Every structure is written in C-alpha cells, then in structure tokens.
Image (tube, rainbow, N blue to C red):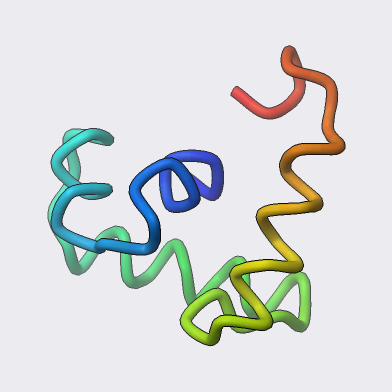
Length: 63
C-alpha cells in the first residue's frame, strides 16, 4: 500500500485503482500506517519520510 501511495504521488484515487480497492479502504490503510509509524503520509514531510523509508527496504520486503 505504501509503495503504491508513493508511486502515485499521494493521489488517492489513482492509488486505490492500482491496488484494486475502494478509496475508503485506502484511507483506512493509510490511517493504520500513520497509527503504526507515527507518521502522517498526508503531509509533505510525512510522505517524504515514508517514501525514503520505502526506498531503503529490500525490494522483496516492500511488495
């Protein structure tokens, strides 16, 4: 979910379409990521931090 979010520049509809889920499901997933990480992906700083974190993950773990 997070990799797709970053790949779609935080555009929720495009991301949800790519994941094959409803936009509300994506919103729930993003809220859950924020709860677990303490980082809000809906802010520029948060998206940058999460993007950098995703880039540092090995490719096999981030899929």
